[in-house]
Amino acid sequence: MWYRAKLSGCILVLIAATSAAFDAQGQAQGEDTPPAASPERASKLDVVIDKSKVDLKEHRLEVKMNHVAAKVTIKVLDESGAVLAEQEHDFAGVAAGSALIVTWSPSTDATVGRIEVFGYDQDGAYKGIAITPWAISIPHEEVNFRRDSADIDDPEKPKLDASFVKVTEAILAHKDLGRISLFIAGHTDSVGTSAYNLQLSRARAQAIAGWFRKRGLKIPIAFEGFGESALLVKTADEVDEPRNRRVDYILSIDEPAFKTSGFRPSWKRAN
Image (tube, rainbow, N blue to C red; front, side):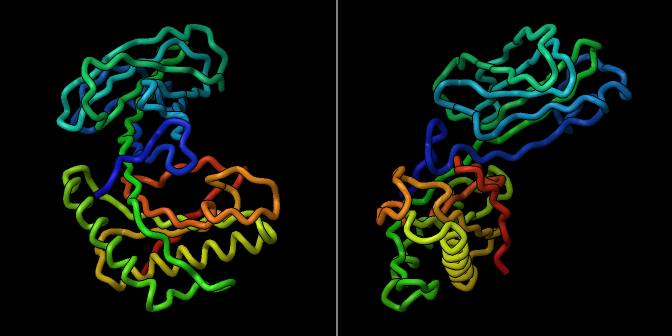
């Protein structure tokens, strides 16, 4: 079976979201919008949601604007499109670049399917952005690689066959959400140099991504290595911790965000 990824304080997937910026008039295709503002003003305003700080459990997220703020509105919808919350937060006079903490109080415990946020500056310009905070981490048995190798040995392939079944079942269960991708993220423990661990974890993630492609998975597949930058179990350097040697299989609409020690992933697509 598959599980929805934990979004609060998780070492793995904090969030995976697809973002759709509204146009200069604040309109997203097919959505109602607030009263129109000047296109010139609206085009100069930038509104950003920090995906790593979207917390569905605590019903909060963080927004930043490049202008002095006035207010932020938020609408939260479930997977059927029903409104779970619609609120307005006053941030009048808050300096540009400040973290604006936006919360909401949902009417039910239904799963969040979409969040729409509008940021307004002190001059009346506004910009909207929508995110789909959906991601699931596929539980699986880890592939054991030989030391310093990224080759998948034949005895390990039944583990991947079992994972393939779980991945395809999850895709079918969520096929109405949009264009789902599989993200393969490799990790190591802290034994060895950071550079070597990054290279090795990337090679192993690529090998597994390639296996899924050859096995017949049709959705987009991306891979990246994180080395020792996103330890599941925090350790000192040169610590042999088996739980940190892992590969994540993540289904999401957009690139998943990881809590790392400064490393910024650059996802590659599997052919």
